[in-house]
Structures are given as C-alpha cells and as structure tokens.
Length: 250
Image 1 (cartoon, rainbow, N blue to C red):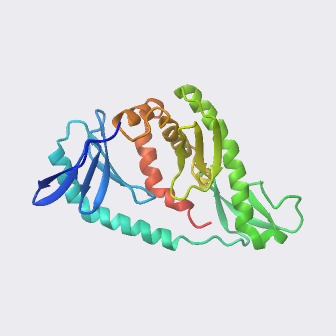
Image 2: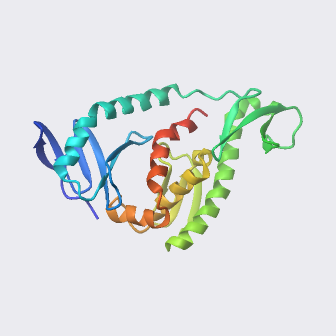
C-alpha cells in the first residue's frame, strides 16, 4: 500500500517530512519499520546507502524525529565511510594465496598447470588454471554465477513452498547495488555476489525477496511476513548492511 504524502513538520527547530513509513530530514530519507517486539530504536545504513529505522510501535513521531536528529552526525559519517570503502575495495589479484569468498568462507587460491576446467574448488582451495589467469575475473564470476544459480534455486524452492509463493523463474545475475528482486511476473533474481555471503544471510535475501510476492513495498505487513519465516531477520538485515561491503572488490 502506498505511503501517505510527505508532510512537513518542525521538531527542535529543524524541518522534517513524515509519512507512515518514511522520514526525510537534513537531506536524508529513512524508511521506518515499527514492531511490537522492538524495545529500542536502531538506524541502519544499507550497502547501497539507503537508510532505515526499526522502532517500537509505541514510539511517537516526535520522539522518532528527535532520535534521528541526534544520530545525524553518525549517519553522515557512516554514509561517507561506506562510500570510501566501496571506492577503496581492494581489487582481487589472481595470484597464489589470494583469498576468495564462497558462502561466507574464504578459500586461498592455488594456480595449477594442468586442469580440465578453468576453476575448481577442491581440498579447501580454489584452483585456477595458470593459462586462465589473464581472464581470472571472468572465470570467477562465471563460476560464482553457476553456483549461485544452483544454490538459490534450491533455497527459493524450499522457502516459496513455505511462504505460499509461486516463483516462475530464478536467475543469478549482476544487479548492481541490489541483492535481489522479485518481479510481478513471478521471476526472482539474485546478485551473483550473494553467493559470497554466509548462508544465513543469503537466506534472508531469499525470504526478503519472496515476501515481496505478498507485499511489493516495505510496509509493516511486509516485515511481518518476513518475521513469520525468519524471526531473527533484524540481525541478519543489520549484518548485511554492515558487512555486505566485504564482497566488493572482485
């Protein structure tokens, strides 16, 4: 359901705009999530720079705005920090001993002279054929995309059944700053980089996208649906926002 139109208010001498699910203040826009189970307020800065607040259902609008104003310096600092990290994300080198993530674990790279395939994962190491080093990124992206396709197809099948969702197609591809998307045609897509995340976090991405089959926006009903299947979704969402940057650099 669409949010109500934003309307200006003034708290502590500063102008702000509010709707049921969003606060705009100091040039920043925060998506608001309320919960009866929540005891405290928390602001999260997403990997993409998007901002969200989780708050108890009983917190007044004025108190929520005051909280945001108190945290503005911290928020601006985190946004700037994430921007710097993304710009400085170390580019992987396809050399002996370099570490590459897969489902949350880091595996060292071994260069091998003879191997039937460009890349394999065996005995706890990524093995890259020496003759393929010059196109290492292409090889790794292809390998990750294939594994992501298989892994997410299985996860979607399991969770779609539980959540009463019909997923017509699952696809692993480059989605830019998005971890996933759910189309009105029942097609669900995931960024191939999501296969680098720990399984519990990647599962959150799955449930998040499938919940959009019931609620296309991020309304309270959407988060209730997510919570029905992942009661601990908040820490997973926070982990993704704080640590998802780790998968950059390939």
